[in-house]
Image (cartoon, rainbow, N blue to C red; front, side, top):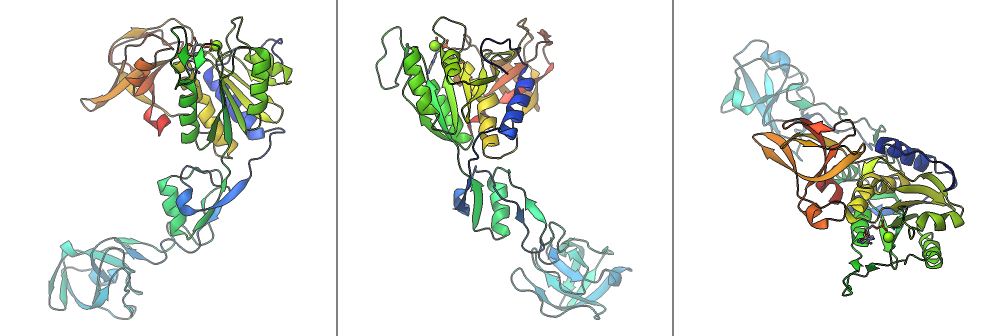
Length: 418
Ligand code: AMP
Ligand code: MG
């Protein structure tokens, strides 16, 4: 930590992850987002801001998991045995009596129905033969067979979801089942996005031959949305200190500030210099990855910021690795960096960068195994190459030579863009 002039070491991406997780968890003077109460249909992707407990036992009754007969297991100690069917239990229409003192009796039961009192097992229909009310049970049925016992999933009053959990389809289903028609979730952070660069022009402008359209703002806005934030894309800031200062002031009205470009060591890379004028604290400004090495993370006033390198693939990688997990943390969520999976390398490769490489690649299922191959690309400016990829191959500094068939890490792109 320090100002631009104090020496800062280069971090591995795992160290940088730890720094982001640590700073965002402790927050310092950074304002809490607060929470809001939303109807259940509006909470997908949001982060739970309260603990949720089971309102009753789950399942609320002993539930049959098969179509068959509910019976007393003791009655099947010797088989075959003939039992008398005395009624029926359906989902939504339980058997009104009980089998407690009714030796030799059984109840026809359907999947999902409450098992009648006094019965302690369900035999599958396939293991029986019925003639009128007489049912032949062919094999002994152990106690609790084909029953999910009341309260075995959750007991009334015990927590089923903790605050900080991101809500997907499964969690929303659980919330519905415990009767949470409305749910308290963290407010969505507004993420201010500033693209910088004299060469960068809006997407709807015909660029001159030396100009570049502002693709990064769109990459970042999409990524912010998918991470549960609300993107606020500001005007492109030129490589000029006053204008950049103005733009950063405006960006600081959001909950998180993300800049692209202007963080390398070139004469016109002014982002850090201007942030210093705001008395910014820098937690790191280089991470040992390619693309994405000149990556800045810090706090200015009561907000966190990221300065991402401007090359489109660098922006994509650094946003995936750091900005998206940070948005989750801001909402009080768990730290959820992208998961790396393993695949076999299709063609041998080498790199001598001394950095962790994130290379656009395609992973396919080949002969029952995931096999990964690099796509053709021209380096970190190449969005055409990126669009042909469905993952990044992650190669670590110590993996200078990778043989064909070696198991390597991949970071899937679909998990990022969802
Ligand atoms: P910089 O990090 O500012 O040195 O930018 C590196 C390269 O990324 C530049 O040469 C630009 O061509 C490209 N670039 C910078 N900002 C953007 C942007 N917003 N959209 C697309 N490309 C960009
Ligand atoms: Mg630039």
